[in-house]
Amino acid sequence: MSMSSVWASSPNPDPMNSYGLVKVLESSRLLSPCLIQTVNNNGRRSSSSSSCVMSSRRRRLSSVVVVSSSLVASPAAGDITLSSEEKVYNVVLRQAALVNKQLRDLDDDVKKPEADVIVPPGTGSLSLLGDAYDRCGEVCAEYAKTFYLGTLLMTPERRKAIWAIYVWCRRTDELVDGPNASHITPMALDRWEARLEDLFRGRPFDMLDAALADTVATYPVDIQPFRDMIEGMRMDLRKSRYKSFDDLYLYCYYVAGTVGLMSVPVMGIDPKSKATTESVYNAALALGIANQLTNILRDVGEDARRGRVYLPQDELAQAGLSDEDIFAGKVTDKWRNFMKMQLKRARMFFDEAEKGVTELDAASRWPVWASLLLYRRILDEIEANDYNNFTKRAYVGKAKKIAALPLAYAKSILKTSR
Image (cartoon, rainbow, N blue to C red; front, top):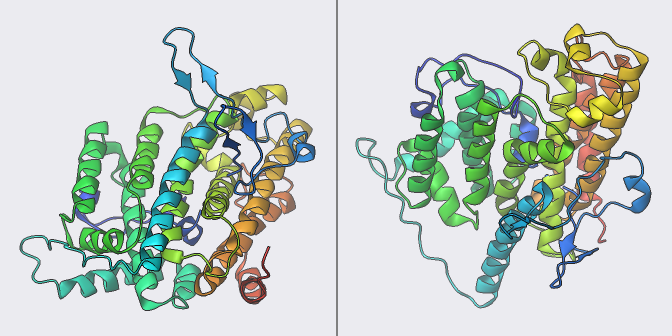
């Protein structure tokens, strides 16, 4: 299970050559991410105001609520082994550095050169770039209606850029979860990554690539989160079990947390915000992790029917459960207790995410708040179903969705400086 579980058919047998009717990447994936601490110059772990750090009281809620992040030296090779959390934080720092550099350039009145995007042969002139952006918007409007409405509140430039990112993520997701997934090989993903590299060099393959190429040339977006999302697709091809939360955390970052790192440079940070750039990215990462954990908990039964278990194997064993219990699909007291801890962890990531949403640019906060509140309510629906995520699909009804929008709007305009 990668970023979504809503399916549609594609008219084109090659998902890399079409935007078609492909697997839906739901609205919440456009801003997504984790609880991270910084490592000081001596290699010791220390709390930082620029990190989404969980309190020691919260850590005791579960033996694996947050992955351990200690640096471990490999006795065989003498190398330093990084935990999943630290691998992700390195990407966060790199992206934050790009944003900070752009801000310094603006302060120094350094004008960014015009993007030199080469339109693919046979597609016409650069005037068609606007058409490509429009098509990205149509796809977003068709498959992510709530989020699309929120994007209309952004400036036209940001709106188009978010649409372009959204469509690339959908196309990538379809490679392993779409109707042609059975034909996708690691080599196909390598070709898709090569296309990505060309795209970032200003040489897009098709017009939808051209829209994203223009976006990444305009905003300080790093290529690494895009590469990492493709790596998440590779992981889906070779893995159907995760031995610990550390493994699962990395997967959640690859398929959902990456979208937050792609999108924050476009969403923008409130000029009046006193928060560090790193802390905003950490919160965006926490939202992505929370969204993906919610997907996993909602879709346990659906994934089991595909022979997949996206739950930490060690935690299942600690709860006295196994894969066989999941395949049997029976709600027992052991399962209820296990699910309570999983829901608690997901909610803690949502709590951390909220701290960063308030720091986004005012024109971007409403759609992000809406996606956060709506996705968080899926956890409530799992509880309302008595933790039966084997045969009942938890979803937020239309009335609750509508009711959440005014609350999201109120939160977006009542921001107070932290």
